[in-house]
Image (cartoon, rainbow, N blue to C red; front, side, top):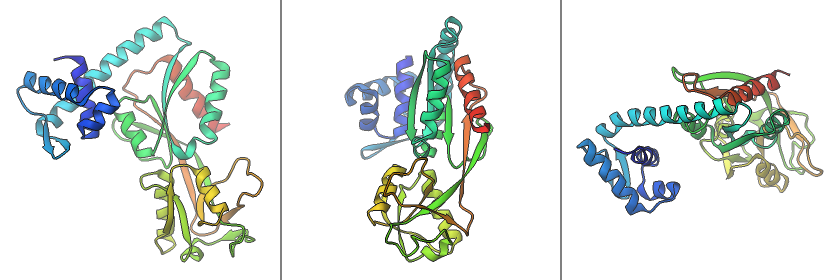
Amino acid sequence: MELQQLAYFRVVARTEHFTQAAEELAITQPALSRAIGRLERDLGVALFDHRGRSVRLNRYGRAFLGYAERALAALEAGRREVGDLADRDAGVIAFGFAHALGTRIVPDLIASFRAQHPRARFQLLQNASHIILAELEAGDVDLALVSPVPPASERIEAVQLASEELFLVVPREHRFAKRRVVNLAELRDDTFVCLREGYGLRTLTDAFCAQAGFAPKIAFEGEEIATLRGLVAVGLGVAIIPAALAPLEGAPPNIRIGEPVCRRSIGLMWEPSRYQPELTQQFRHHVMTSFRS
């Protein structure tokens, strides 16, 4: 059994697709299939059930996956601890964050930290919050900045850092464009532009509309808040988003939502039992103190 086989096995288990896993690993699919085949022969059992082009872990694969992940995590922790002992002020911080936090919050955090630690480097992963959390549990990121903040688990610690008000934005010719406050129920007949399903802000939008007694009519689904703001500006719909830090001239104004209360929580998550280099611990402290101040 080889370390590389375990790494390959973990990616196939996550993607449930040999072609997608091979592309992610930058190897050919036949090479990946041979590696998994050798691992299965070493173990004496098949680890996957094949379903057309996709695969799924069987009960042997599910039992083995936890051991493989712990073995890979332990080796990575050992490698990083040795590097940390060699140089405490340099290294790579694997930082995952939700799409909706990447416009202003994350750049400010990284810039202010690197002003104090110029040799710090970052491996950044920007995605939907549920994907970021999966990467955190797999050990692929050290820290995860997410919104909304899910409950902590036995393995993962979560700290809420802030609660941010969300606003309604509408096209300038919209009937509510001159209003300062709007109740969300008044938008039941409007079309919305939203982030894709699975993104934290989309989950919140659906939940707020449900509280107001309707399901939003979705005209467009995107991945960036700036895109939603632009689509609202050209009249494609309304949106519920955070306030712009520096609104552009001609951008739709922020309108407060009276009912229901529309806010999003922002929190930091990590796995306390996993080794973190001193530099990563310093960045975690930096993130928490930056929000407090």
